[in-house]
Length: 133
Image (tube, rainbow, N blue to C red; front, side, top):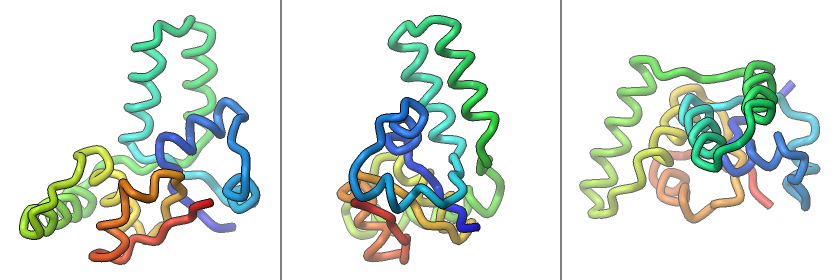
């Protein structure tokens, strides 16, 4: 079975059952993996939108049934390398995207995303593998 990290948009759409298009087919037979960042972002979105406790509990149950990558030293070091390289290029990247990329690169896993633009620097300069439309 192939493990694939889902970015927050893909995870959210998968949870809600609204992921469509070619990417939905590509992800049908993979094991979804969530980064600690995605768990945090999903929680924030639910809290910021004042979702009911029932919906928050449903999200928690969905997240609990997924594999997750939690931050550890190799991921933190990878993030530091990515951040320094982006700064050297004069193109600092958004923190959360960089953490998600660091999780993927440190674990050797591809990233499923519809937001290719957010990750293209990591693809071109660090070998991040994307699964997209």
